[in-house]
Image (cartoon, rainbow, N blue to C red):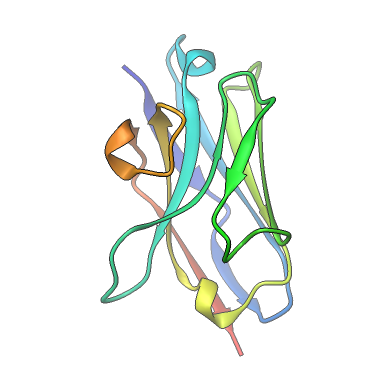
Length: 121
């Protein structure tokens, strides 16, 4: 079992940066691919980025490619999402998830509670 806790969300102006963290409990963290998803008000949850269990491979949604970077530290049991050049359309609750390497939400078995990111124009 893996428990996930996100942090680092907040309010930022357009063009600014934030770094989200997702701390995992449990010894099996390093065996999971880790993903970030987001959900804006009135919209479905959407894929943002995923990183392989070893951290050697990552994949991004087209909407964030070149602006966001996912990384992980398997010693600290933490996955990060560095978000640069933020836009108002990035406003959402951001969730981390542990599971299989995929853009599909149903590939993930464990989810955090989410952290709010608000980008003002």
